[in-house]
Image (cartoon, rainbow, N blue to C red; front, side):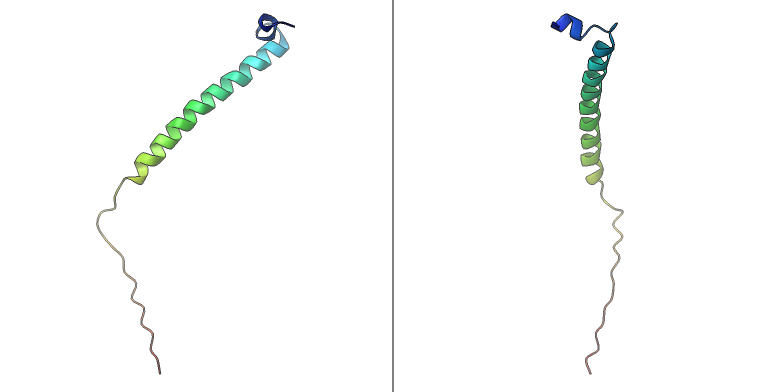
Length: 60
């Protein structure tokens, strides 16, 4: 079986191989987009309001 038969979309094996390759490429680009958006969202700062918790320990 040569390469042209392996990627022939009219055969079951060819359609399967093409779909696997396409899913790898789409997954790669969508992963890059996800990582880019994740990095951008981590740069967002809060509104400046800070919450402090007051802890007092009474030693007797």
